[in-house]
Image (tube, rainbow, N blue to C red; front, side, top):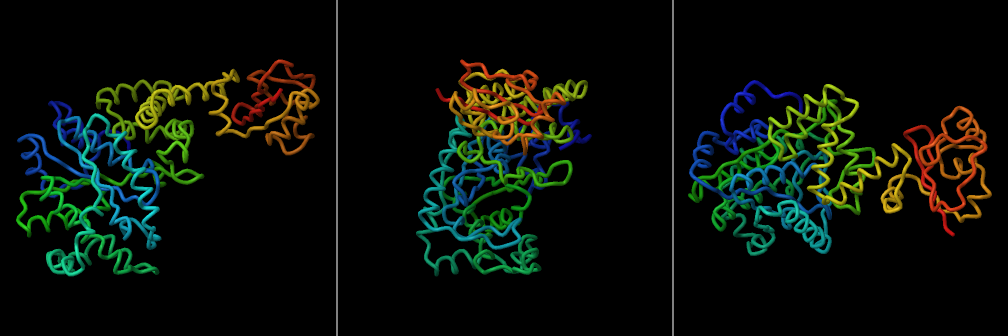
Amino acid sequence: MGQLRPAQRRLLRRPLSVLDELHARGLVEECTDEDALRARLAEGPLRLYCGFDPTASSLHVGHLMGVAVLRLFARAGHRPIALVGGFTGMVGDPSGKSDERNLLGEEELDRNRAALYEQLSRLLEGAEPIMVDNRDWFLQVSALELLRDIGKLVSVNDMLNRTSVRTRLASESGLSYTEFSYQLLQAHDFAHLREELECELQVGGSDQYGNITAGTDMIRRRALGRAFGLVWPLMTKADGTKFGKTEGGSVWLDPERTSPYAFHQFWLNSADADVRGLLATFTLMSIEEIDALVAEHQENPGRRLAQARLADDLTTWVHGEEATASANRARAALFSGRLEERDLDVLEGEIPTLRLSRGEVTAASLPELLQRSGLVPSLSEGRRTIASGGAYVSGERAGEDWAADPTAQFLLLGRGRRRHALVRIAP
């Protein structure tokens, strides 16, 4: 996610095709036949697909890379196909997994599929995505047809040579036949889309390359026409840790699972070493704009200009402009202590919140409020925090003689500038 490589910079000296742009953004690791794909793209629009298994009721930020690539192709005039794997989701892809996935029931898969359809349609709004579910065609295939018409086109030697298969075979948990068959199913997905929807390109993460080439091989053996595969590098942070994970787990696109404020904060907290790559991967900013912003950011890293633009663009894309504005107001309130009533509900979900009657607030001392809100473990620690100048109420440093405003509807308490709690006051 760091600086542009020399080859990427050379690409910027001429107008970018979509393939050039993907290279410049660091979104190409392997391609089945790049010269042929480049020639095909020059002929005119094509259809491409990326698959998303409905193993949860929401996509997470790790999936955004695939959606971002579809969006870039759509912006260049190509037609994206988003495949939600209602059938393959019942099997489980061993790629990148150390253990076999728990199999989901049909009702849960139905709920997950509906949720992913809604998310993908919204994220690709304006791109006119074609939404498909591989359960629609796999449920029409008998076991005999699967073995005779599909299985005979796939080499077991090739299947065993896939990195994901070899990794799992060497692990303690091993690999079930169910998961071993996943690449055969994904290969048939590509062949079906090639035949029925004239889809010529499959894209995915580099851990999907074996599954994708299984598809291009099947298309070739069935004489269905030309087909290509393209994969991007798996994303890790500059410190080597997995992208998209926090102490609380995955960062989801569903606002009920990860709030827009927390989503915004996730991107805002990106490391300086990562931010340029994240802007190139996930935003529609040109490379020139990104480099100019990063240069400005480097002059004063403390302002976090690049992270702020990244957080705003991604939150607006996923949650809308109002969510971005609300997240920024809440962040400013925590920094300044000046909180607007309309943002109380946003902060209540993000920082410790205490609900007290006006009488309870009036009767309580500041050390008691600090303790009851969880900012300090004891009254004595509360008094020490106040004495050292570390206690704040609504952005102002508060002393032992602090008294609550009798008309206040809420209090924003602070221990230092980074720890906060909200007190909502009932009449």
